[in-house]
Image (cartoon, rainbow, N blue to C red; front, side, top):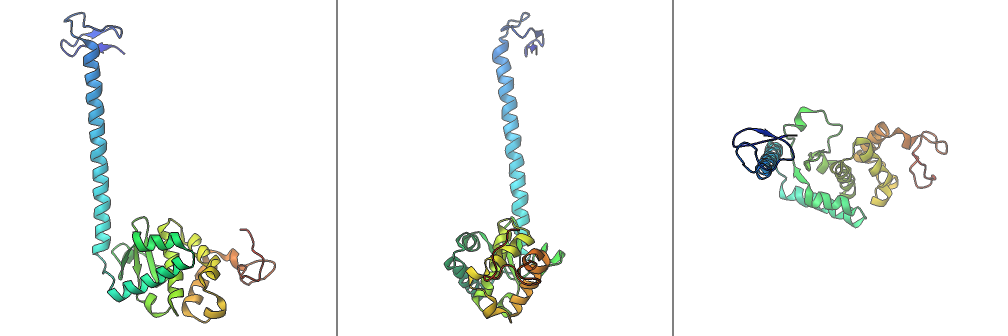
Amino acid sequence: MKKKCLQCRLVNYPTANECVRCGSMLTIEFEKVASSFAQKLIGRAIFFLFVCFAAIAGFYASLVFSSKAMTYEQKRTIGESTDLLRSRGFTTEALILAHLATFRSTDNWLNASVVKENAFAAANFPLGIVTIYSDFFTYPADEVERAAILLHEAKHLQGADEKEAYEFVWRNRDKLGWTSEKYSESVVWNEIRKQTRDYVPGLFVCDVNPAGDCTESRVPSLNF
């Protein structure tokens, strides 16, 4: 690369320190140009990040304000189920639900535009918005079943897809205390079991228990 004098515009050799025409210091001026370019580049990067942040914040606000907040009683019920998750060893998921999730009681404009697979809850990843529908408070037999639903949504907030979320909840149901002996007749149990079979059929087909549940405690664990 050749050095162009900023004073007289003469192109000098790369090894020259002074312009052969006007005597201006080429090295110093070259450094100033490089510094100016770097400052402009940093300034544009900061502006781009600011625009991105503003766009995300605006999108988040539109989701929050296009839906209704939870009532005090609803928040208390969710808090009890979250505490149950923590007490059963799901510390990370309980932390996410308690401190990073924003709970709403009705669909925001984005959720309203898509078909949902169940009527209990829905999560918007990575924004941390969890919509809790009225059936969440109606059909579960107790806080354990509500905790199972929240555990599913917590996995979504961690980036898990439907298959991963259903499989995690189903494999950990004994740890949660959500067992077939107690809940096999409940609406929530049968609905989630059906959805789990649809998304993770491998959990219900195995040689030792044909057409049954391969995750039952009496059956040796299998690798998938």
